[in-house]
Length: 285
Image (cartoon, rainbow, N blue to C red; front, side, top):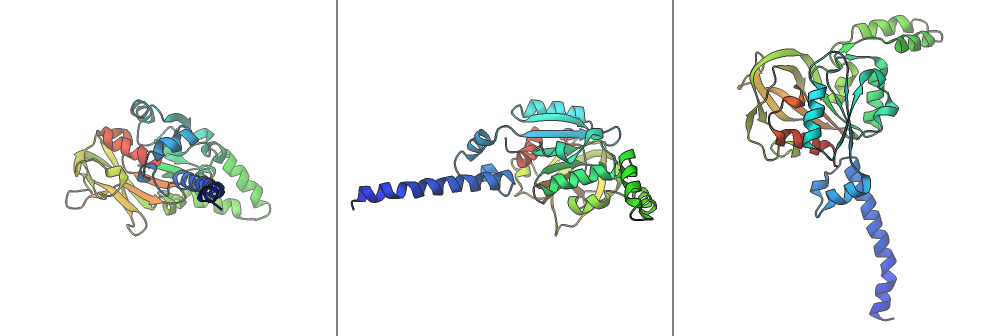
């Protein structure tokens, strides 16, 4: 058999190997095990050509820190290829969230158990979130939650009373703390709040100065366990957060997708590079 015949015989194997490699790259990029920019060549454009533009939802309610409209306008101008959609928290469900590569929760202080369950399902299925400041720190029961509790109470007497008490006494992020890897302490006023880059190796910190100002007038004070999450930025400029003892400002952890907590509204970042880095890290296209 000639060398040419051997080559022709191997062509199907090479094609199969190429297809398998392409599928592998799509999977690891989709679930954010690697960022497309970390793959040699022009993989970002190839991936986006296959998967289409990213969809991002900005979910908000009536109360809490942040200005979702300002975030939508600023990010839409900065990232014209990314599809951003505002969404009311009243319509929040797992089936809605699964349509988005990234969901931002801002000015959504009030949260119900059904909403928490929908968010947890979304994260379990590989979704990524930006969780802003005091979102999800005031827990209440919707009519649907109460109906579900009453129905369960028929087969599990006493459940309704336990459930109502449990929600009414939940503090901070509640069960979401285990996903966010931060514990909420409260909101403090800020004066000349500055960010410090804590993880220079993070894609979110690329091309930035070691310290820069943001427009935040209020920030959330949180604690985090650095063995379970990465502090990308710290901040100072509040009563509790000083230059000598800065507080966590942006905390990231890998779950199925990525979970990023910001102690201040992202639209208050003065640096377009920092804001673009944040979204580049979480959405590919």
